[in-house]
Image (cartoon, rainbow, N blue to C red; front, side):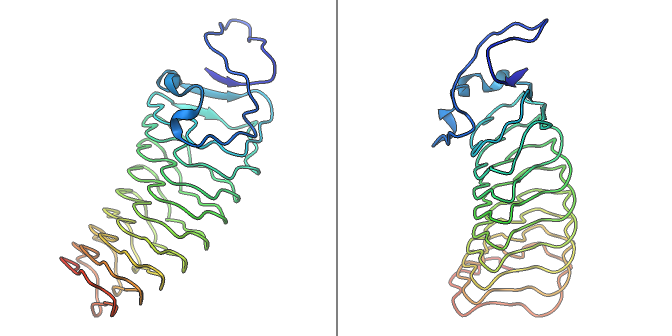
Length: 249
Protein backbone atom coordinates (compact mmCIF):
# COMPACT_ATOMS: atom_id res chain seq x y z
CA UNK A 1 0.00 0.00 0.00
CA UNK A 2 1.03 3.58 -0.72
CA UNK A 3 -0.35 5.66 2.12
CA UNK A 4 -0.81 9.39 2.70
CA UNK A 5 -1.07 10.12 6.44
CA UNK A 6 -0.11 12.52 9.19
CA UNK A 7 2.70 11.35 11.43
CA UNK A 8 5.05 8.38 11.17
CA UNK A 9 3.08 5.61 12.87
CA UNK A 10 2.69 2.45 10.81
CA UNK A 11 -0.52 0.45 10.91
CA UNK A 12 -0.45 -2.80 12.87
CA UNK A 13 0.68 -5.71 10.77
CA UNK A 14 2.43 -3.53 8.21
CA UNK A 15 6.09 -2.68 7.71
CA UNK A 16 7.44 0.67 6.51
CA UNK A 17 9.73 0.25 3.51
CA UNK A 18 10.11 3.89 2.42
CA UNK A 19 8.69 7.26 3.43
CA UNK A 20 8.73 10.88 2.31
CA UNK A 21 7.84 13.94 4.36
CA UNK A 22 6.73 17.17 2.77
CA UNK A 23 3.75 19.48 2.34
CA UNK A 24 2.33 17.51 -0.56
CA UNK A 25 -0.98 19.36 -0.46
CA UNK A 26 0.68 22.61 -1.52
CA UNK A 27 3.42 21.48 -3.90
CA UNK A 28 3.20 21.50 -7.68
CA UNK A 29 5.96 19.45 -9.26
CA UNK A 30 7.12 20.87 -12.61
CA UNK A 31 7.58 17.53 -14.41
CA UNK A 32 6.42 13.97 -13.93
CA UNK A 33 9.78 12.63 -12.75
CA UNK A 34 10.10 15.18 -9.95
CA UNK A 35 7.81 13.48 -7.44
CA UNK A 36 10.06 11.92 -4.80
CA UNK A 37 8.52 8.46 -5.27
CA UNK A 38 8.92 8.49 -9.06
CA UNK A 39 11.44 5.63 -9.13
CA UNK A 40 9.12 3.53 -6.94
CA UNK A 41 6.01 4.12 -9.05
CA UNK A 42 5.93 0.62 -10.52
CA UNK A 43 5.82 -0.86 -7.01
CA UNK A 44 2.60 0.94 -6.10
CA UNK A 45 -0.53 -1.26 -6.21
CA UNK A 46 -3.02 0.45 -3.88
CA UNK A 47 -3.27 4.04 -2.64
CA UNK A 48 -4.99 5.15 0.57
CA UNK A 49 -5.54 8.57 2.12
CA UNK A 50 -5.81 8.06 5.88
CA UNK A 51 -6.90 11.63 6.59
CA UNK A 52 -8.70 14.33 4.61
CA UNK A 53 -6.31 15.37 1.89
CA UNK A 54 -6.86 18.56 -0.17
CA UNK A 55 -4.01 18.92 -2.67
CA UNK A 56 -3.51 21.75 -5.14
CA UNK A 57 -1.79 19.54 -7.71
CA UNK A 58 -1.41 15.81 -8.34
CA UNK A 59 0.34 16.31 -11.67
CA UNK A 60 2.56 13.33 -12.49
CA UNK A 61 2.00 11.66 -9.14
CA UNK A 62 1.43 8.16 -10.45
CA UNK A 63 3.22 8.53 -13.77
CA UNK A 64 4.08 5.07 -15.14
CA UNK A 65 2.59 3.28 -12.13
CA UNK A 66 1.78 0.31 -14.33
CA UNK A 67 0.85 -1.95 -11.40
CA UNK A 68 -1.46 0.52 -9.67
CA UNK A 69 -4.87 -1.13 -9.30
CA UNK A 70 -6.99 0.98 -6.97
CA UNK A 71 -7.19 4.29 -5.15
CA UNK A 72 -9.46 4.90 -2.18
CA UNK A 73 -10.69 8.48 -2.63
CA UNK A 74 -12.87 8.45 0.52
CA UNK A 75 -10.69 11.05 2.28
CA UNK A 76 -9.61 12.84 -0.87
CA UNK A 77 -11.09 16.34 -1.25
CA UNK A 78 -10.83 17.41 -4.91
CA UNK A 79 -12.14 20.95 -4.46
CA UNK A 80 -8.68 22.62 -4.45
CA UNK A 81 -7.32 20.51 -7.26
CA UNK A 82 -6.16 22.51 -10.30
CA UNK A 83 -3.48 20.28 -11.89
CA UNK A 84 -3.97 16.71 -13.11
CA UNK A 85 -1.52 16.50 -16.02
CA UNK A 86 -0.09 12.95 -16.46
CA UNK A 87 -1.46 11.96 -13.04
CA UNK A 88 -2.29 8.39 -14.10
CA UNK A 89 -0.13 8.23 -17.21
CA UNK A 90 0.19 4.57 -18.33
CA UNK A 91 -1.58 3.21 -15.25
CA UNK A 92 -2.68 0.30 -17.38
CA UNK A 93 -4.13 -1.73 -14.48
CA UNK A 94 -6.05 1.06 -12.76
CA UNK A 95 -9.73 0.25 -12.26
CA UNK A 96 -12.64 2.50 -11.31
CA UNK A 97 -14.03 5.68 -12.82
CA UNK A 98 -12.27 8.95 -13.73
CA UNK A 99 -12.39 11.93 -11.36
CA UNK A 100 -11.88 15.62 -12.10
CA UNK A 101 -12.46 18.75 -10.02
CA UNK A 102 -14.30 21.72 -11.51
CA UNK A 103 -11.15 23.75 -10.82
CA UNK A 104 -8.76 21.55 -12.80
CA UNK A 105 -7.02 23.48 -15.58
CA UNK A 106 -4.55 20.95 -16.98
CA UNK A 107 -5.74 17.47 -17.95
CA UNK A 108 -3.13 16.62 -20.57
CA UNK A 109 -2.32 12.85 -20.52
CA UNK A 110 -4.25 12.46 -17.25
CA UNK A 111 -5.59 8.98 -18.00
CA UNK A 112 -3.41 8.11 -20.98
CA UNK A 113 -3.30 4.32 -21.57
CA UNK A 114 -5.57 3.52 -18.62
CA UNK A 115 -6.94 0.52 -20.47
CA UNK A 116 -9.03 -0.87 -17.61
CA UNK A 117 -10.66 2.37 -16.52
CA UNK A 118 -14.46 2.27 -16.71
CA UNK A 119 -17.28 4.75 -16.19
CA UNK A 120 -17.77 8.01 -18.07
CA UNK A 121 -15.18 10.70 -18.86
CA UNK A 122 -15.26 13.89 -16.82
CA UNK A 123 -13.93 17.41 -17.42
CA UNK A 124 -13.85 20.38 -15.06
CA UNK A 125 -15.55 23.66 -15.87
CA UNK A 126 -12.16 25.41 -15.94
CA UNK A 127 -10.20 22.80 -17.88
CA UNK A 128 -8.18 24.30 -20.72
CA UNK A 129 -5.95 21.46 -21.95
CA UNK A 130 -7.28 17.94 -22.63
CA UNK A 131 -4.48 16.69 -24.89
CA UNK A 132 -4.46 12.86 -24.70
CA UNK A 133 -6.59 13.09 -21.54
CA UNK A 134 -8.36 9.75 -22.18
CA UNK A 135 -6.35 8.39 -25.09
CA UNK A 136 -6.51 4.58 -25.32
CA UNK A 137 -9.03 4.26 -22.49
CA UNK A 138 -10.72 1.43 -24.36
CA UNK A 139 -13.30 0.64 -21.68
CA UNK A 140 -14.68 4.03 -20.68
CA UNK A 141 -18.29 4.48 -21.72
CA UNK A 142 -20.82 7.28 -21.79
CA UNK A 143 -20.51 10.43 -23.86
CA UNK A 144 -17.47 12.66 -24.45
CA UNK A 145 -17.24 15.87 -22.43
CA UNK A 146 -15.54 19.17 -23.17
CA UNK A 147 -15.88 22.27 -20.98
CA UNK A 148 -16.47 25.72 -22.44
CA UNK A 149 -12.90 26.82 -21.66
CA UNK A 150 -11.10 23.91 -23.32
CA UNK A 151 -8.78 25.02 -26.12
CA UNK A 152 -6.95 21.78 -26.93
CA UNK A 153 -8.63 18.38 -27.41
CA UNK A 154 -5.98 16.85 -29.65
CA UNK A 155 -6.13 13.06 -29.18
CA UNK A 156 -8.32 13.59 -26.11
CA UNK A 157 -10.41 10.48 -26.87
CA UNK A 158 -8.07 8.72 -29.27
CA UNK A 159 -9.14 5.05 -29.61
CA UNK A 160 -11.89 5.25 -26.96
CA UNK A 161 -13.81 2.56 -28.79
CA UNK A 162 -16.66 2.20 -26.31
CA UNK A 163 -17.66 5.84 -26.03
CA UNK A 164 -21.20 6.48 -27.13
CA UNK A 165 -23.26 9.59 -27.68
CA UNK A 166 -22.25 12.55 -29.82
CA UNK A 167 -18.86 14.25 -30.14
CA UNK A 168 -18.45 17.67 -28.54
CA UNK A 169 -16.18 20.61 -29.27
CA UNK A 170 -16.27 23.89 -27.36
CA UNK A 171 -16.20 27.22 -29.18
CA UNK A 172 -12.72 27.87 -27.76
CA UNK A 173 -11.04 24.74 -29.12
CA UNK A 174 -8.24 25.51 -31.57
CA UNK A 175 -6.58 22.09 -31.87
CA UNK A 176 -8.77 19.03 -32.44
CA UNK A 177 -6.33 16.76 -34.28
CA UNK A 178 -7.10 13.04 -33.68
CA UNK A 179 -9.63 14.06 -31.01
CA UNK A 180 -12.05 11.20 -31.78
CA UNK A 181 -9.81 8.97 -33.83
CA UNK A 182 -11.22 5.41 -33.94
CA UNK A 183 -14.15 6.20 -31.63
CA UNK A 184 -16.19 3.77 -33.67
CA UNK A 185 -19.31 3.71 -31.46
CA UNK A 186 -19.93 7.45 -31.43
CA UNK A 187 -23.22 8.47 -33.00
CA UNK A 188 -24.80 11.80 -33.80
CA UNK A 189 -23.27 14.49 -35.96
CA UNK A 190 -19.69 15.82 -35.99
CA UNK A 191 -18.94 19.04 -34.11
CA UNK A 192 -16.35 21.74 -34.77
CA UNK A 193 -16.02 25.21 -33.24
CA UNK A 194 -15.13 28.22 -35.36
CA UNK A 195 -11.72 28.64 -33.71
CA UNK A 196 -10.46 25.18 -34.67
CA UNK A 197 -7.45 25.32 -37.00
CA UNK A 198 -6.38 21.66 -36.98
CA UNK A 199 -8.87 18.85 -37.70
CA UNK A 200 -6.36 16.23 -38.80
CA UNK A 201 -7.93 12.76 -38.43
CA UNK A 202 -10.37 14.25 -35.94
CA UNK A 203 -13.10 11.76 -36.84
CA UNK A 204 -11.14 9.10 -38.68
CA UNK A 205 -12.71 5.68 -38.16
CA UNK A 206 -15.93 7.03 -36.61
CA UNK A 207 -18.04 4.65 -38.67
CA UNK A 208 -21.33 5.36 -36.94
CA UNK A 209 -21.45 9.14 -37.07
CA UNK A 210 -24.42 10.48 -39.01
CA UNK A 211 -25.48 13.92 -40.13
CA UNK A 212 -23.39 16.31 -42.18
CA UNK A 213 -19.66 17.01 -41.95
CA UNK A 214 -18.68 20.35 -40.45
CA UNK A 215 -15.66 22.61 -40.77
CA UNK A 216 -14.99 25.79 -38.79
CA UNK A 217 -14.16 28.96 -40.69
CA UNK A 218 -10.53 28.94 -39.46
CA UNK A 219 -9.59 25.32 -40.19
CA UNK A 220 -6.32 24.92 -42.09
CA UNK A 221 -5.62 21.18 -41.85
CA UNK A 222 -8.19 18.50 -42.75
CA UNK A 223 -5.95 15.51 -43.49
CA UNK A 224 -8.00 12.29 -42.97
CA UNK A 225 -10.61 14.28 -41.00
CA UNK A 226 -13.57 12.14 -42.08
CA UNK A 227 -11.78 9.07 -43.40
CA UNK A 228 -13.95 5.92 -43.13
CA UNK A 229 -16.97 7.89 -41.85
CA UNK A 230 -19.21 5.75 -44.04
CA UNK A 231 -22.56 6.95 -42.72
CA UNK A 232 -22.18 10.71 -43.03
CA UNK A 233 -24.67 12.41 -45.30
CA UNK A 234 -25.08 15.94 -46.55
CA UNK A 235 -22.56 18.01 -48.47
CA UNK A 236 -18.81 18.14 -47.77
CA UNK A 237 -17.58 21.17 -45.84
CA UNK A 238 -14.35 23.10 -46.19
CA UNK A 239 -13.28 26.54 -44.99
CA UNK A 240 -11.52 29.06 -47.23
CA UNK A 241 -8.40 28.73 -45.08
CA UNK A 242 -7.83 24.99 -45.58
CA UNK A 243 -4.42 24.26 -47.11
CA UNK A 244 -4.31 20.46 -46.81
CA UNK A 245 -7.25 18.15 -47.55
CA UNK A 246 -5.43 14.90 -48.25
CA UNK A 247 -7.86 11.98 -47.79
CA UNK A 248 -10.34 14.24 -45.95
CA UNK A 249 -13.37 12.22 -47.05
